[in-house]
Length: 429
Ligand code: CMC
Image (cartoon, rainbow, N blue to C red; front, side, top):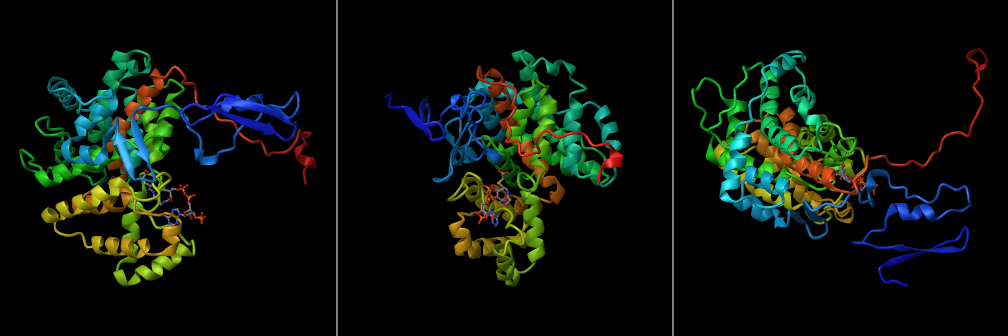
């Protein structure tokens, strides 16, 4: 019997099957041969939320949730956050290697020179209500971009594809900032191509009457680090949406709109917004014990805590906590930090959180930093999406290049009624 195999005995029939094991996985389709009777469909797995199903092979991001390890293309997140920059990390994710000086200069030039958006996008923005949530606006304008670049449907053409990757990374920041300016009734601030990616985003968000906006270097660096920390996270909900929708061979703007929509949810990219609302609701360190009691009574969850993969600590949370203090040196302390630190301390000593392996995740401190930098709460998920864009692009291209890739089409375990006869409306009870 080969060593790299799994023997399964089906007790319904007494038959034994041998399935090959490759890289710690069996092929789900190998189970299909296991049938209870001749006309049986064959065995499948039931896995809501894909908690134990690998949907692809990927060489982009490695996570060891127990050890708190996160690496992009082999490089530890701590080193990238300290020594690299967002656009370099974006290149690494998309191209698989760190760029040479020449390639990096070209990449930066290309991204920087694709930051402008078609003027008609502004009319699209005008159509939204004055109080439209910027994330919903962001999702819609991303989808809208596909109407400006009809060539984008040629997803098998590598050159065409590369252009869309550059456009999406470049324009994400502009769409995001414009969504914000629209929501506060400010005139749009156009991209400034002399600035860094993060610096230009600050410019488009906050520029008022000055002829030239000069971002604070500490805040610019902090934002750059936050973008790096959010850049990819293997098969999370929004990346799964990117791959799932992209697997139909749709253009990348439509697939990215779907990914961003997935990110909007409070269990994913919307969590940092929920953390701030939670800290505000607590309002005072004295109310923390009562709040924890209610979490343990399962009235609600402690937002910014827990992760599907990290069961010891989220390495991104450790880096972010440090960034928070750098930012406060410039902005002054966000009073919510005291509540957050105390809430974290109490939760980490509590049996409920220890036994459930619940630790602060990336979103626990990011909202506090964003707020100190004057980003409105509604922009938090949008900022997450800007950071995640290179990851979505890398994962999308990897999927298209994968010879194993197929349109995503999961199965179901049917639990509805057997065939029955249609009853005319006058005879229904
Ligand atoms: N507060 C209280 N209890 C929790 C929490 C929490 N934040 N998270 C999980 N649990 C409990 C849950 O009640 C369950 O308990 P039991 O087994 O006794 O019924 C157990 O832990 C497992 O929970 P789960 O929902 O099955 O775990 P999951 O892996 O499906 O969910 C999660 C992961 C991130 C959705 C969840 O931890 C959560 O809802 N956290 C709060 C929202 C949040 O901070 N999301 C941001 C995630 S990081 C950013 C990103 O990558 O998107």
